[in-house]
Length: 159
Image 1: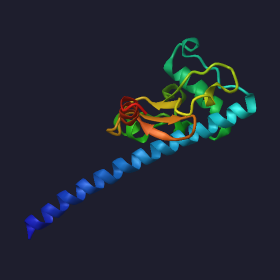
Image 2 (image 1 turned 45 degrees about the vertical axis):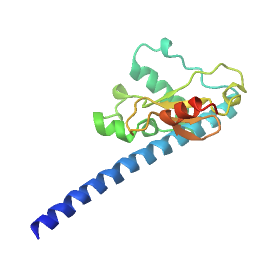
Image 3 (image 1 turned 180 degrees about the horizontal axis):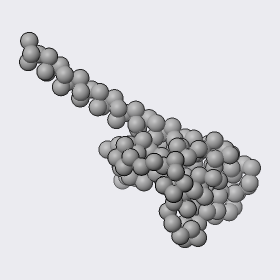
Image 4 (image 1 turned 90 degrees about the vertical axis):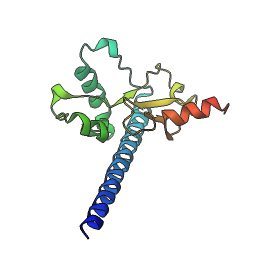
């Protein structure tokens, strides 16, 4: 009887771990969708992609804060920039301004109004780390989400 309970406990822990991992990936995808929506709203209001250059901001937290502040009026709050899987790994208090970080990197675009939509499979935001096991997540100009390994497979197959 004890052996059966132990086996069920091990199976249950494995299932629970898988469910947590899947939930973090789903939340990460939701964050990317929110960033995409906020960036689209920003572009509609301003007529251009946010022109925030990394080299103009000396610290990573300053650069992160500028992006966070730029898209916050469009619904992308500080927590939207945080991948739950990365947060679980590093456990920092990202709410503190000095700990501001971006777990998703915005792609640089020029200031022309149509550049960001010119190619449907052009990424807008890319996850900084492969924490979900299938490559960094990306969200494209058309709003679709994929992972880096799938994109590489697609490009290698001639599509």
